[in-house]
Image 1 (cartoon, helix red, strand yellow):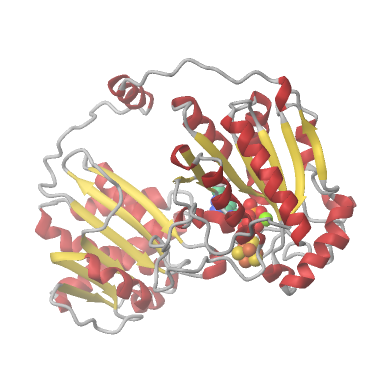
Image 2 (cartoon, rainbow, N blue to C red):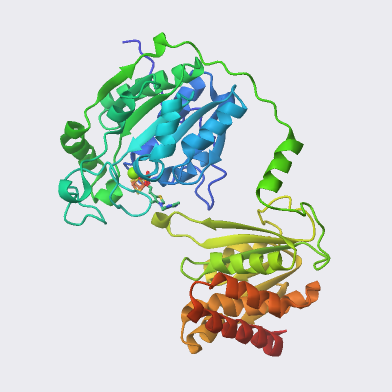
Amino acid sequence: MGRKLKFGKPTGFFDVFDRRPGPIKKNMHYCPGCGHGILHKLIAEAIVDLDMRDHMVVISPVGCAVFAYYYFDAGGISVPHGRAPAVATGIIRANPDSFVISYQGDGDLGAIGLNNFLQAANRGENMTVCFVNNAIYGMTSGQMAPTTLIGQKTATSPYGRSVENEGYPLKVSEMVAALESPIYVERVALTTPANIMAARKALRKGLTNMKERRGFSLVEFLSGCPINQKMTAQQVDEWIEKEMIPYFPLGCFKDIAAERKPISRPKPTFDKKKVLNALVSSAGITKWGAKSTVLRKELRVKCAGYGGQGILSLGMMIAAMGQSRDINVSWLPSYGPEMRGGTANCSVVLSNNVIGSPVVQNTNILIAMNQPSMNKFLPDLVDGGILLYDSTNIAPPKTDRRVYAVAASDIAIKLGNIRCANSAIMGAFAACLKGFELEDYEDAFEEAIRQTFRKKKELVELNIKAFHEGRKSVETRNV
Ligand SMILES: Cc1ncc(C[n+]2csc(CCOP(=O)(O)OP(=O)(O)O)c2C)c(N)n1
Ligand code: SF4
Ligand SMILES: [Mg+2]
Protein backbone atom coordinates (compact mmCIF):
# COMPACT_ATOMS: atom_id res chain seq x y z
CA MET A 1 0.00 0.00 0.00
CA GLY A 2 1.11 3.49 -0.64
CA ARG A 3 3.62 2.28 -3.24
CA LYS A 4 3.83 4.64 -6.16
CA LEU A 5 3.42 2.94 -9.49
CA LYS A 6 4.85 4.58 -12.57
CA PHE A 7 3.06 4.58 -15.87
CA GLY A 8 4.06 6.16 -19.11
CA LYS A 9 7.36 6.69 -20.79
CA PRO A 10 10.45 6.89 -18.55
CA THR A 11 12.28 10.21 -18.79
CA GLY A 12 15.44 8.36 -19.76
CA PHE A 13 13.86 7.93 -23.21
CA PHE A 14 13.58 10.70 -25.76
CA ASP A 15 10.04 12.10 -25.93
CA VAL A 16 9.97 11.41 -29.66
CA PHE A 17 12.33 8.93 -31.33
CA ASP A 18 13.50 11.36 -34.00
CA ARG A 19 16.45 9.24 -35.05
CA ARG A 20 14.09 6.48 -36.13
CA PRO A 21 13.64 6.77 -39.90
CA GLY A 22 10.18 6.77 -41.46
CA PRO A 23 6.96 8.18 -40.07
CA ILE A 24 6.80 6.05 -36.89
CA LYS A 25 8.52 8.14 -34.24
CA LYS A 26 6.76 7.03 -31.08
CA ASN A 27 7.14 3.27 -31.10
CA MET A 28 10.17 1.06 -30.74
CA HIS A 29 11.34 -1.12 -33.60
CA TYR A 30 11.20 -4.30 -31.50
CA CYS A 31 8.63 -7.01 -32.19
CA PRO A 32 5.72 -7.27 -29.74
CA GLY A 33 6.71 -9.44 -26.78
CA CYS A 34 10.42 -8.95 -27.29
CA GLY A 35 12.53 -8.76 -24.11
CA HIS A 36 14.67 -5.93 -25.49
CA GLY A 37 11.76 -3.49 -25.17
CA ILE A 38 11.19 -4.41 -21.51
CA LEU A 39 14.87 -4.06 -20.67
CA HIS A 40 15.10 -0.73 -22.47
CA LYS A 41 12.35 0.59 -20.22
CA LEU A 42 14.14 -0.64 -17.09
CA ILE A 43 17.37 1.02 -18.23
CA ALA A 44 15.66 4.30 -19.15
CA GLU A 45 14.09 4.48 -15.68
CA ALA A 46 17.23 3.48 -13.82
CA ILE A 47 19.71 5.87 -15.42
CA VAL A 48 17.49 8.80 -14.43
CA ASP A 49 16.58 7.53 -10.96
CA LEU A 50 20.27 6.86 -10.20
CA ASP A 51 21.24 10.25 -11.62
CA MET A 52 23.68 8.68 -14.09
CA ARG A 53 22.19 9.82 -17.38
CA ASP A 54 24.45 12.80 -18.01
CA HIS A 55 27.56 10.64 -17.87
CA MET A 56 26.04 7.52 -19.37
CA VAL A 57 26.96 5.93 -22.70
CA VAL A 58 24.68 3.09 -23.78
CA ILE A 59 26.40 0.91 -26.36
CA SER A 60 24.23 -0.32 -29.22
CA PRO A 61 25.59 -3.70 -30.35
CA VAL A 62 25.06 -5.58 -33.60
CA GLY A 63 21.91 -7.62 -33.02
CA CYS A 64 18.29 -6.56 -32.64
CA ALA A 65 19.40 -3.85 -30.17
CA VAL A 66 21.43 -2.20 -32.94
CA PHE A 67 19.13 0.81 -32.81
CA ALA A 68 19.19 1.28 -29.02
CA TYR A 69 20.55 4.77 -29.70
CA TYR A 70 17.18 5.79 -31.16
CA TYR A 71 15.66 5.65 -27.72
CA PHE A 72 17.90 6.65 -24.81
CA ASP A 73 18.27 10.30 -23.95
CA ALA A 74 21.89 9.64 -22.97
CA GLY A 75 25.22 9.19 -24.72
CA GLY A 76 25.24 6.41 -27.27
CA ILE A 77 27.58 4.68 -29.64
CA SER A 78 27.16 1.83 -32.14
CA VAL A 79 29.92 -0.73 -32.32
CA PRO A 80 30.91 -3.66 -34.53
CA HIS A 81 29.64 -7.12 -33.62
CA GLY A 82 31.00 -8.33 -30.27
CA ARG A 83 33.15 -5.29 -29.64
CA ALA A 84 31.01 -3.53 -27.00
CA PRO A 85 33.28 -4.36 -24.03
CA ALA A 86 36.38 -3.24 -25.96
CA VAL A 87 34.78 0.07 -26.93
CA ALA A 88 33.38 0.44 -23.39
CA THR A 89 36.92 -0.03 -22.07
CA GLY A 90 38.18 2.72 -24.37
CA ILE A 91 35.43 5.08 -23.21
CA ILE A 92 35.97 4.59 -19.49
CA ARG A 93 39.76 4.58 -19.73
CA ALA A 94 39.78 7.78 -21.79
CA ASN A 95 37.15 9.41 -19.62
CA PRO A 96 36.92 7.77 -16.19
CA ASP A 97 34.02 10.08 -15.28
CA SER A 98 31.79 8.28 -17.77
CA PHE A 99 29.53 5.28 -17.17
CA VAL A 100 29.02 2.64 -19.82
CA ILE A 101 26.37 -0.01 -20.34
CA SER A 102 27.72 -2.74 -22.59
CA TYR A 103 24.42 -4.00 -24.02
CA GLN A 104 24.86 -7.38 -25.74
CA GLY A 105 22.95 -10.36 -27.13
CA ASP A 106 23.97 -14.00 -26.82
CA GLY A 107 25.43 -14.10 -30.33
CA ASP A 108 27.26 -10.85 -29.77
CA LEU A 109 28.61 -11.70 -26.32
CA GLY A 110 28.75 -15.50 -26.34
CA ALA A 111 30.01 -16.13 -29.90
CA ILE A 112 31.80 -13.46 -31.92
CA GLY A 113 32.65 -11.26 -28.91
CA LEU A 114 33.35 -13.85 -26.21
CA ASN A 115 37.04 -13.04 -25.91
CA ASN A 116 36.47 -9.27 -25.76
CA PHE A 117 33.85 -9.83 -23.09
CA LEU A 118 35.86 -12.26 -20.96
CA GLN A 119 38.99 -10.10 -21.08
CA ALA A 120 37.04 -7.02 -19.98
CA ALA A 121 35.46 -9.06 -17.15
CA ASN A 122 38.85 -10.42 -16.17
CA ARG A 123 40.37 -6.94 -16.14
CA GLY A 124 37.54 -5.85 -13.86
CA GLU A 125 36.66 -2.84 -15.98
CA ASN A 126 34.20 -0.46 -14.34
CA MET A 127 31.22 -1.25 -16.55
CA THR A 128 27.83 -2.93 -16.41
CA VAL A 129 27.14 -5.58 -19.00
CA CYS A 130 23.47 -6.15 -19.82
CA PHE A 131 23.46 -9.56 -21.45
CA VAL A 132 20.23 -10.38 -23.28
CA ASN A 133 20.06 -14.15 -23.55
CA ASN A 134 17.20 -15.07 -25.88
CA ALA A 135 18.86 -18.34 -26.93
CA ILE A 136 18.91 -17.38 -30.60
CA TYR A 137 20.29 -14.93 -33.16
CA GLY A 138 17.25 -12.68 -33.34
CA MET A 139 18.27 -10.13 -35.90
CA THR A 140 19.42 -12.54 -38.59
CA SER A 141 16.28 -14.75 -38.50
CA GLY A 142 16.90 -17.24 -35.73
CA GLN A 143 20.16 -19.12 -36.11
CA MET A 144 21.60 -21.21 -33.28
CA ALA A 145 23.39 -19.26 -30.55
CA PRO A 146 25.90 -20.48 -27.94
CA THR A 147 23.00 -20.42 -25.44
CA THR A 148 20.49 -22.32 -27.61
CA LEU A 149 19.02 -25.13 -25.51
CA ILE A 150 19.53 -28.83 -26.16
CA GLY A 151 16.76 -29.95 -28.51
CA GLN A 152 15.84 -26.38 -29.47
CA LYS A 153 15.13 -26.06 -33.19
CA THR A 154 16.60 -23.05 -34.94
CA ALA A 155 17.29 -22.09 -38.55
CA THR A 156 20.72 -23.74 -38.30
CA SER A 157 19.72 -26.63 -36.04
CA PRO A 158 16.50 -27.75 -37.74
CA TYR A 159 16.53 -31.10 -35.90
CA GLY A 160 17.33 -29.47 -32.57
CA ARG A 161 20.66 -28.68 -30.92
CA SER A 162 22.44 -31.85 -29.83
CA VAL A 163 25.19 -32.32 -27.27
CA GLU A 164 27.08 -34.54 -29.72
CA ASN A 165 27.24 -31.89 -32.42
CA GLU A 166 27.27 -28.57 -30.62
CA GLY A 167 28.03 -29.30 -26.97
CA TYR A 168 26.11 -27.89 -24.03
CA PRO A 169 24.69 -24.35 -24.01
CA LEU A 170 27.13 -21.81 -22.62
CA LYS A 171 26.47 -20.78 -19.01
CA VAL A 172 27.90 -17.29 -19.18
CA SER A 173 26.99 -16.11 -15.67
CA GLU A 174 28.45 -19.20 -14.00
CA MET A 175 31.64 -18.83 -16.08
CA VAL A 176 32.11 -15.14 -15.23
CA ALA A 177 31.35 -15.68 -11.55
CA ALA A 178 34.34 -18.04 -11.45
CA LEU A 179 36.73 -15.22 -12.41
CA GLU A 180 38.45 -13.21 -9.67
CA SER A 181 37.78 -9.69 -10.92
CA PRO A 182 34.01 -9.40 -11.51
CA ILE A 183 32.17 -8.11 -8.46
CA TYR A 184 28.57 -8.86 -9.25
CA VAL A 185 26.90 -11.50 -11.43
CA GLU A 186 23.17 -12.21 -11.45
CA ARG A 187 20.77 -13.97 -13.82
CA VAL A 188 17.19 -12.73 -14.05
CA ALA A 189 14.27 -13.23 -16.45
CA LEU A 190 12.10 -10.74 -18.32
CA THR A 191 8.91 -12.79 -18.00
CA THR A 192 6.42 -12.52 -15.12
CA PRO A 193 5.88 -9.24 -13.25
CA ALA A 194 7.74 -10.70 -10.24
CA ASN A 195 10.70 -11.67 -12.44
CA ILE A 196 10.73 -8.27 -14.12
CA MET A 197 10.82 -6.57 -10.71
CA ALA A 198 13.79 -8.78 -9.77
CA ALA A 199 15.44 -7.85 -13.08
CA ARG A 200 14.87 -4.16 -12.30
CA LYS A 201 16.57 -4.60 -8.92
CA ALA A 202 19.54 -6.50 -10.39
CA LEU A 203 20.05 -3.88 -13.10
CA ARG A 204 20.05 -1.10 -10.51
CA LYS A 205 22.56 -2.98 -8.41
CA GLY A 206 24.89 -3.37 -11.38
CA LEU A 207 24.55 0.32 -12.22
CA THR A 208 25.10 1.38 -8.60
CA ASN A 209 28.31 -0.67 -8.51
CA MET A 210 29.47 1.20 -11.58
CA LYS A 211 28.47 4.56 -10.09
CA GLU A 212 30.59 3.71 -7.04
CA ARG A 213 33.38 2.62 -9.43
CA ARG A 214 33.68 -0.81 -7.88
CA GLY A 215 34.29 -2.69 -11.11
CA PHE A 216 32.67 -5.20 -13.46
CA SER A 217 29.03 -6.24 -13.08
CA LEU A 218 27.15 -8.67 -15.30
CA VAL A 219 23.39 -9.00 -15.36
CA GLU A 220 22.07 -11.77 -17.62
CA PHE A 221 18.48 -11.31 -18.73
CA LEU A 222 16.63 -14.39 -20.02
CA SER A 223 14.51 -12.92 -22.73
CA GLY A 224 11.95 -13.87 -25.36
CA CYS A 225 12.25 -13.74 -29.14
CA PRO A 226 8.67 -14.69 -30.07
CA ILE A 227 9.15 -14.04 -33.78
CA ASN A 228 11.98 -16.49 -34.32
CA GLN A 229 10.58 -19.01 -31.85
CA LYS A 230 7.33 -18.81 -33.82
CA MET A 231 5.41 -18.32 -30.57
CA THR A 232 3.13 -15.71 -29.09
CA ALA A 233 4.52 -13.40 -26.43
CA GLN A 234 2.77 -15.44 -23.75
CA GLN A 235 3.98 -18.76 -25.13
CA VAL A 236 7.56 -17.58 -25.22
CA ASP A 237 7.38 -16.47 -21.58
CA GLU A 238 6.02 -19.89 -20.66
CA TRP A 239 8.83 -21.51 -22.68
CA ILE A 240 11.43 -19.49 -20.77
CA GLU A 241 9.91 -20.52 -17.44
CA LYS A 242 9.57 -24.18 -18.41
CA GLU A 243 12.64 -24.79 -20.59
CA MET A 244 15.21 -22.06 -20.10
CA ILE A 245 15.16 -21.44 -16.35
CA PRO A 246 15.77 -25.12 -15.42
CA TYR A 247 19.02 -25.02 -17.45
CA PHE A 248 19.86 -21.37 -16.73
CA PRO A 249 18.82 -21.03 -13.08
CA LEU A 250 17.95 -17.55 -11.85
CA GLY A 251 19.82 -15.99 -8.97
CA CYS A 252 22.89 -14.15 -7.82
CA PHE A 253 26.14 -15.98 -8.53
CA LYS A 254 28.49 -13.45 -7.03
CA ASP A 255 28.22 -10.22 -5.05
CA ILE A 256 31.47 -8.95 -3.56
CA ALA A 257 31.08 -5.25 -4.40
CA ALA A 258 31.29 -4.23 -0.75
CA GLU A 259 34.72 -5.88 -0.47
CA ARG A 260 36.26 -3.88 -3.32
CA LYS A 261 37.71 -0.39 -3.05
CA PRO A 262 36.61 2.04 -5.77
CA ILE A 263 38.85 1.89 -8.84
CA SER A 264 41.04 4.93 -9.19
CA ARG A 265 43.21 5.57 -12.23
CA PRO A 266 45.04 8.76 -13.17
CA LYS A 267 43.11 10.75 -15.75
CA PRO A 268 44.78 10.17 -19.12
CA THR A 269 46.12 13.05 -21.17
CA PHE A 270 45.23 13.30 -24.83
CA ASP A 271 47.65 14.84 -27.30
CA LYS A 272 45.89 14.99 -30.66
CA LYS A 273 49.10 15.49 -32.65
CA LYS A 274 50.85 12.52 -31.07
CA VAL A 275 47.86 10.24 -31.72
CA LEU A 276 47.57 11.37 -35.34
CA ASN A 277 51.26 10.81 -35.98
CA ALA A 278 51.13 7.37 -34.39
CA LEU A 279 48.14 6.41 -36.52
CA VAL A 280 49.62 7.75 -39.73
CA SER A 281 52.98 6.05 -39.35
CA SER A 282 51.46 2.72 -38.23
CA ALA A 283 49.22 2.70 -41.31
CA GLY A 284 52.25 3.27 -43.54
CA ILE A 285 50.83 6.55 -44.83
CA THR A 286 53.60 8.87 -45.90
CA LYS A 287 51.62 11.70 -47.41
CA TRP A 288 49.10 12.58 -44.72
CA GLY A 289 47.02 15.53 -45.83
CA ALA A 290 48.61 15.58 -49.28
CA LYS A 291 46.67 17.54 -51.88
CA SER A 292 45.75 15.64 -55.00
CA THR A 293 46.39 17.39 -58.26
CA VAL A 294 44.16 14.99 -60.17
CA LEU A 295 40.78 15.95 -58.80
CA ARG A 296 40.02 19.60 -58.29
CA LYS A 297 36.74 19.17 -56.56
CA GLU A 298 35.54 16.94 -53.70
CA LEU A 299 33.10 14.31 -54.89
CA ARG A 300 30.58 12.89 -52.46
CA VAL A 301 29.07 9.74 -53.92
CA LYS A 302 26.22 7.58 -52.65
CA CYS A 303 25.77 4.06 -54.05
CA ALA A 304 22.47 2.44 -53.14
CA GLY A 305 20.42 -0.64 -53.97
CA TYR A 306 19.43 -3.89 -52.32
CA GLY A 307 21.64 -6.58 -50.78
CA GLY A 308 23.16 -8.87 -53.44
CA GLN A 309 23.55 -6.17 -56.11
CA GLY A 310 27.18 -5.63 -55.19
CA ILE A 311 26.56 -2.12 -53.89
CA LEU A 312 29.29 -2.23 -51.29
CA SER A 313 31.82 -3.61 -53.81
CA LEU A 314 30.81 -0.90 -56.26
CA GLY A 315 31.72 1.71 -53.65
CA MET A 316 34.94 -0.17 -52.90
CA MET A 317 35.92 -0.18 -56.57
CA ILE A 318 35.30 3.54 -56.87
CA ALA A 319 37.39 4.12 -53.73
CA ALA A 320 40.15 1.83 -55.04
CA MET A 321 40.16 3.77 -58.32
CA GLY A 322 40.68 7.01 -56.41
CA GLN A 323 43.34 5.54 -54.17
CA SER A 324 45.36 4.34 -57.14
CA ARG A 325 45.45 7.95 -58.42
CA ASP A 326 46.53 9.46 -55.09
CA ILE A 327 43.12 10.92 -54.42
CA ASN A 328 42.10 10.89 -50.73
CA VAL A 329 39.21 8.47 -50.34
CA SER A 330 36.79 7.16 -47.74
CA TRP A 331 34.25 4.34 -47.97
CA LEU A 332 31.48 3.86 -45.47
CA PRO A 333 29.02 0.96 -45.77
CA SER A 334 25.51 0.94 -44.35
CA TYR A 335 22.99 -1.86 -44.44
CA GLY A 336 19.82 -2.48 -42.48
CA PRO A 337 19.18 -5.39 -40.13
CA GLU A 338 18.15 -8.42 -42.20
CA MET A 339 14.95 -9.05 -40.21
CA ARG A 340 13.57 -5.75 -41.40
CA GLY A 341 14.86 -5.69 -44.99
CA GLY A 342 15.97 -2.24 -46.07
CA THR A 343 18.44 -0.98 -48.58
CA ALA A 344 22.19 -1.47 -48.73
CA ASN A 345 24.14 1.66 -49.41
CA CYS A 346 27.60 3.05 -49.08
CA SER A 347 29.11 6.49 -49.06
CA VAL A 348 32.30 7.21 -50.96
CA VAL A 349 34.19 10.47 -50.74
CA LEU A 350 36.89 11.30 -53.29
CA SER A 351 38.75 14.40 -52.28
CA ASN A 352 41.76 16.46 -53.19
CA ASN A 353 42.06 17.35 -49.52
CA VAL A 354 41.85 15.65 -46.12
CA ILE A 355 38.37 14.16 -45.77
CA GLY A 356 36.49 15.60 -42.82
CA SER A 357 33.62 13.13 -42.60
CA PRO A 358 32.99 9.91 -44.52
CA VAL A 359 29.24 10.40 -44.14
CA VAL A 360 27.64 11.56 -47.40
CA GLN A 361 24.54 13.69 -47.02
CA ASN A 362 24.93 16.41 -49.63
CA THR A 363 25.45 14.01 -52.49
CA ASN A 364 27.19 15.07 -55.72
CA ILE A 365 26.57 11.79 -57.51
CA LEU A 366 23.85 9.29 -56.62
CA ILE A 367 24.09 5.80 -58.10
CA ALA A 368 20.72 4.11 -57.55
CA MET A 369 20.15 0.47 -58.45
CA ASN A 370 16.61 0.00 -57.18
CA GLN A 371 13.51 2.13 -56.82
CA PRO A 372 13.35 2.41 -52.99
CA SER A 373 16.98 3.57 -52.93
CA MET A 374 16.34 6.25 -55.50
CA ASN A 375 13.23 7.45 -53.67
CA LYS A 376 15.19 7.57 -50.44
CA PHE A 377 18.37 9.31 -51.57
CA LEU A 378 17.29 11.55 -54.46
CA PRO A 379 16.27 14.38 -52.09
CA ASP A 380 19.89 14.50 -50.83
CA LEU A 381 21.29 15.27 -54.29
CA VAL A 382 22.75 18.79 -54.38
CA ASP A 383 21.91 21.40 -57.02
CA GLY A 384 23.97 20.50 -60.07
CA GLY A 385 24.33 16.93 -58.78
CA ILE A 386 24.13 13.87 -61.01
CA LEU A 387 21.78 10.92 -60.76
CA LEU A 388 22.85 7.65 -62.35
CA TYR A 389 20.26 4.93 -62.22
CA ASP A 390 19.71 1.38 -63.41
CA SER A 391 16.88 1.89 -65.91
CA THR A 392 16.21 -1.86 -65.97
CA ASN A 393 14.85 -1.61 -62.42
CA ILE A 394 13.83 2.01 -62.01
CA ALA A 395 11.19 4.18 -63.66
CA PRO A 396 12.42 7.55 -65.04
CA PRO A 397 12.43 10.03 -62.17
CA LYS A 398 10.93 13.48 -62.10
CA THR A 399 13.83 15.71 -61.16
CA ASP A 400 15.61 18.80 -62.42
CA ARG A 401 19.03 17.24 -61.69
CA ARG A 402 21.30 15.87 -64.42
CA VAL A 403 20.18 12.30 -65.05
CA TYR A 404 22.00 9.43 -66.73
CA ALA A 405 20.00 6.25 -67.34
CA VAL A 406 21.91 3.04 -67.88
CA ALA A 407 20.24 -0.34 -68.27
CA ALA A 408 22.93 -1.91 -66.10
CA SER A 409 21.03 -5.09 -65.22
CA ASP A 410 20.11 -5.68 -68.90
CA ILE A 411 23.75 -5.22 -69.90
CA ALA A 412 24.84 -7.69 -67.22
CA ILE A 413 22.20 -10.26 -68.22
CA LYS A 414 23.30 -10.00 -71.87
CA LEU A 415 26.88 -10.61 -70.76
CA GLY A 416 25.68 -13.73 -68.97
CA ASN A 417 25.93 -12.73 -65.33
CA ILE A 418 23.56 -10.33 -63.57
CA ARG A 419 26.15 -9.84 -60.84
CA CYS A 420 28.29 -7.63 -63.05
CA ALA A 421 25.54 -4.97 -63.20
CA ASN A 422 27.49 -3.00 -60.62
CA SER A 423 30.49 -2.79 -62.97
CA ALA A 424 28.18 -1.68 -65.80
CA ILE A 425 26.83 1.19 -63.76
CA MET A 426 30.37 2.01 -62.68
CA GLY A 427 31.18 2.47 -66.37
CA ALA A 428 28.45 5.09 -66.50
CA PHE A 429 29.91 6.69 -63.40
CA ALA A 430 33.33 6.79 -65.04
CA ALA A 431 31.84 8.56 -68.06
CA CYS A 432 30.46 11.24 -65.73
CA LEU A 433 33.90 11.77 -64.21
CA LYS A 434 35.10 13.26 -67.47
CA GLY A 435 33.65 16.51 -66.21
CA PHE A 436 35.75 16.23 -63.07
CA GLU A 437 39.16 16.31 -64.76
CA LEU A 438 40.15 12.71 -64.14
CA GLU A 439 42.02 11.98 -67.31
CA ASP A 440 43.14 8.37 -67.29
CA TYR A 441 39.89 7.30 -65.70
CA GLU A 442 39.44 4.19 -67.82
CA ASP A 443 42.79 2.72 -66.80
CA ALA A 444 42.18 3.65 -63.18
CA PHE A 445 38.82 1.86 -63.13
CA GLU A 446 40.18 -1.19 -64.91
CA GLU A 447 42.91 -1.42 -62.28
CA ALA A 448 40.26 -1.19 -59.56
CA ILE A 449 38.31 -4.07 -61.16
CA ARG A 450 41.46 -6.21 -61.46
CA GLN A 451 42.27 -5.48 -57.83
CA THR A 452 38.74 -6.32 -56.61
CA PHE A 453 38.49 -9.60 -58.48
CA ARG A 454 42.14 -10.62 -58.12
CA LYS A 455 41.13 -13.88 -56.43
CA LYS A 456 38.47 -14.70 -59.07
CA LYS A 457 40.34 -14.24 -62.31
CA GLU A 458 37.44 -15.47 -64.45
CA LEU A 459 35.38 -12.48 -63.32
CA VAL A 460 37.96 -9.83 -64.26
CA GLU A 461 37.32 -9.75 -68.01
CA LEU A 462 33.56 -10.05 -67.55
CA ASN A 463 33.47 -7.03 -65.24
CA ILE A 464 35.78 -5.02 -67.47
CA LYS A 465 33.45 -5.75 -70.39
CA ALA A 466 30.43 -4.71 -68.35
CA PHE A 467 32.26 -1.55 -67.31
CA HIS A 468 32.88 -0.52 -70.93
CA GLU A 469 29.35 -1.44 -72.02
CA GLY A 470 27.94 0.75 -69.27
CA ARG A 471 30.30 3.59 -70.13
CA LYS A 472 29.46 3.42 -73.84
CA SER A 473 25.73 3.25 -73.24
CA VAL A 474 25.87 6.53 -71.35
CA GLU A 475 28.27 8.24 -73.74
CA THR A 476 26.30 7.31 -76.83
CA ARG A 477 22.69 7.43 -75.70
CA ASN A 478 21.95 9.46 -72.66
CA VAL A 479 24.27 12.40 -72.23
C1 LIG B 1 31.10 -9.15 -38.11
C2 LIG B 1 29.68 -9.60 -38.27
N1 LIG B 1 29.42 -10.91 -38.33
C3 LIG B 1 28.15 -11.34 -38.46
C4 LIG B 1 27.13 -10.44 -38.56
C5 LIG B 1 25.72 -10.93 -38.77
N2 LIG B 1 24.95 -10.81 -37.52
C6 LIG B 1 24.17 -9.74 -37.31
S1 LIG B 1 23.33 -9.85 -35.85
C7 LIG B 1 23.99 -11.37 -35.55
C8 LIG B 1 23.62 -12.15 -34.31
C9 LIG B 1 22.85 -11.37 -33.33
O1 LIG B 1 22.41 -12.20 -32.31
P1 LIG B 1 22.40 -11.74 -30.81
O2 LIG B 1 23.70 -11.12 -30.43
O3 LIG B 1 21.97 -12.90 -29.99
O4 LIG B 1 21.34 -10.55 -30.80
P2 LIG B 1 19.73 -10.62 -30.90
O5 LIG B 1 19.41 -10.13 -32.27
O6 LIG B 1 19.29 -12.02 -30.65
O7 LIG B 1 19.28 -9.68 -29.84
C10 LIG B 1 24.85 -11.77 -36.55
C11 LIG B 1 25.59 -13.04 -36.56
C12 LIG B 1 27.45 -9.06 -38.50
N3 LIG B 1 26.51 -8.13 -38.58
N4 LIG B 1 28.74 -8.67 -38.36
S1 SF4 C 1 13.55 -10.70 -33.89
FE1 SF4 C 1 13.40 -11.43 -31.76
S2 SF4 C 1 15.01 -10.34 -30.60
FE2 SF4 C 1 14.66 -9.27 -32.56
S3 SF4 C 1 13.17 -7.65 -32.12
FE3 SF4 C 1 12.03 -9.43 -32.85
S4 SF4 C 1 11.48 -10.59 -31.00
FE4 SF4 C 1 13.12 -9.15 -30.44
MG1 LIG D 1 20.12 -13.43 -29.24
